[in-house]
Image (cartoon, rainbow, N blue to C red; front, side):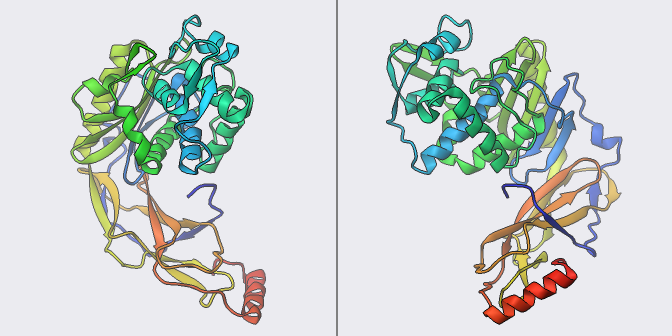
Length: 388
């Protein structure tokens, strides 16, 4: 759920005698890189984390936030693929062929359709394409940067900051590897109609052919995204996604000294993740996971269920242990609530940094109560608090 949850209800009697790793077993994967995160694409479970919450220079990996803003505008009908934007002198000088940076080689003063700019951002990582899109959609690049920040906060990225649309060196361009992984997962799940472009091998525009910069696409590891990055400050990094053994994994690394090191470390991380984890069903389909408090409804609580069986990710091997689970939601909820509405999620921690978050849904309708009943409920909440 977007935004910061303001309520968390402990599932007091949920005891999960599942396999969780010991501290030593949790670190079976090691990397010389400063930053590395691996998450499960289905549940969002963090499978590996090295400095995952430490801000770093993301370089062109921050272009994923530029794309998130554009994708949302397309999905909501505020932009179309056929929209045309002018290549400004600033875009040409800052990100064009004379800038010495990754470029779509756009001629100054030309007009470019948004669909071509998108491919120019995704495939050759064109800095000029980013700036043209930013100026065309928001008027100026700084105005677009504000949209990037707003969108980051909307989807729950609380630490990321941006100084430009390109990822070119700027003191405000800071992201964490965990938030980059979360952003990659968000793009995959929220924009499936656009995501396929990340796997496109090449792109022709204005008589020029551009090859996708993502080295994972040619490594025969079933990778299909997302974005590389490099500056002298950050080193070589990547947000990568691949389906390994039927499980989608999203990896982020940064700080590699060479391109070959970047590719090798991501391959090892994917192989380790695919080999060492499995799904565990903790609630059956339609089994009530918990309840959420409702204000002014025909009932005080709405039962919560998963979309089918509720599953989390656990290590394949380890020692028996217990998991801590919380139902997290913004509350109290307000009616009307319809059966099937997502109103919460189940957050499960294994004590070793592994976290799964599973959406939870209302299992029944809750309508608004009478004015008198709503007033009485307000008194109850004021007197006792809403978590009862």
